[in-house]
Image (cartoon, rainbow, N blue to C red; front, side):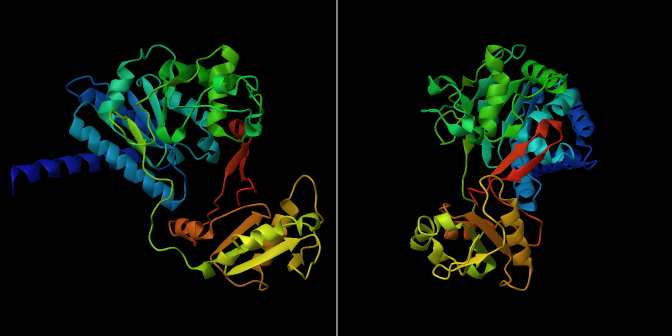
Length: 389
C-alpha cells in the first residue's frame, strides 16, 4: 500500500470518528457537542481559530434533509482535517433539541449560548446546500474583533416597500439590509449572548414568522440599539474567487421524476372566481396533471367543480382544506402517493414538482410547502401557507 493511500485512509478514519462522536447520545446533543469541542481544543497542538467556530447547518427532520445535512457535515469535517487549523463544532439544527420551532433560529440561540458561549467566538449558520471553504471563512472572521458585536452576511434589501415585511422602511426600503440565508451568515458570540438575554426576558413585537431572514435582521437591529448587517463579499451564492461560501443548487437531482399518477391535485376555488381564475389554470398547468379536481362552495358542471359543503370565508380556510383531506383518504378519489393542494391563483410547474418529490419517501409523514410560524419563541406552532401550494 502506498504512503498516499495510508494518509488518505487515516484522514477518513479521523473524519468518521468525529462524525460518530458528534452523534452519540441521541437528542441530548448540547452537552455532547460541548464535550467534543473541549476535547478538540485541549488536544490541539496549536490553538486555532476553527476550534472557536460553531457551524450550524439548518437541517430539517425528514430523512432526505437529515441525510443532506449529514453529508455536508462530513464534508466540513473532512476539509478541516485536511486544513489542520483546528476542528469546528458542526451541528445539525434538527438535532439540537426536540423542539420543532428551532428552524426559526431565535428559539435555538439560548441553547447555543449555554452550550458553546464560553468556548466559541463565532456562530455561522448555513443551509443544507451551502458549501463552505474553511480557509476563506477563517480569513473573513480574522477581519473582525470577536469580542465586539458583529452580524455578517451577504446583504439583500427591498427595492420597494413589501407587504411581507409590513412595509418596514417604506420611505427608503433599500436602507435596511438582511442576510441571504443561502450564502450563510454569522454572529459573534457577544451578540449571540445579548440576543439570548432578550429572548429569555423580553417579548417579540410580532408573534408571526413570515420571512425569517428579514425578521432576524430586524430583531438584531433592535430599532437602532443593535448592529445592522455587515455586508461580506466572500459570503456568496454564485461561485467566484475568494468565496467563503457558495450555494450549490435550488433544485436537487434525486433521479427520475415520480409518475404523474403519483400526484392527486386539489384546486381550491369559490364561485366568484370560477370565470376569472379557473380558466388560467386550465390554460396553463392543468394539462400536466393526471388526477385533478376543483373544489368549490358550489357545484359547477361547466368546470366541473365539487362542492364540499363548506361555505367560502374571507378569513380562515381550514374547513375546506380538512374536507379535501378527508375526501382524499376516502374511496372517492384515486389512490396516489402525494396530495397537492393549491389555490385557484397558484401557478405551479408540475414537472419540476415531480422531480422534487423523487427526493422524498411517500411512506414518511412529510408535508412540503412554504413554512410560516406563530409564537415559535414561546413554544408555538408552524404551518404551511396556502398560496404556494
